[in-house]
Length: 377
Image (cartoon, rainbow, N blue to C red; front, side, top):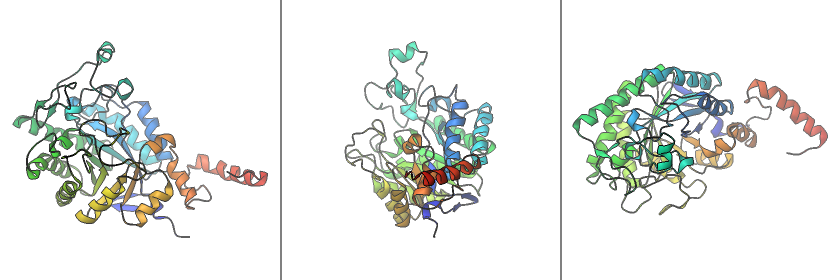
């Protein structure tokens, strides 16, 4: 039987992923002064044990002021390397590729953790000790009247942020990560440069700083390691960033040495995970067409993400050439063994050989026992 495409290895520069399933970066808001904790080790380690090809550490702030919340993971100081190295090493030991997303929250910085409101800090947050800090953005326009007004970036700020990304790439390498993704989506700093809703002006000018960041990180990142960029393929708001803009950006990113565009959407004026969308209907696989168009028109590798729920859906997207990689997020939270269950569903692992040996040896016996008992699952 031919191995399903979802479970065929893929080469990205000098890095081989064991399959095409990637666990997306998902913020846990549980770091301590930017330091990852045992929560992160167990949280991310489950996905590596669960059979994913690559596992991403959450959006990791390149500057302290670039955190979304007080609970964000950081990579702005060398003291944060050992904790990240421990996570990357365990992911690697389980056969997955360790990856990290570098981020700067921009005008979405200094906000409340999701379970405390997922918006501007309130008096209740202040009472808990979560104090606000100053934020930066392309202009001084806040998300809306309730949010902190950012300071428009000046010349010196650009050099400081570029240096922060460069040093973050150096730290990511020291920590043992093999893939870096730049977060240029969901209303965070790089996305606010791109969108005309947060940075009025011609496309060429709006792309300039995100492209400078990509070029700086590519120079700091070894040639044999891939670089991804996550984009909001569309702002999902009238007069915002468009899919055609994303194609043009992807062409420029490819020329700079970016290997994969991670095609998400939304977030410029609020949450990227809100249930109500203004333009694009949220249905299973609703962002796959974005990955397909960027892949075809820009000639670059893409990763599809967003309400990809079943192995059959993922396999079909790959077989049709709509993406090169499939990212899952909340489905992995619901089922950390999603990749292993997908392999079983697609007939790629009838003997539990893809499972950790500590589990697989017993599951084969469980299967035989259930058959003997006539139990169908």
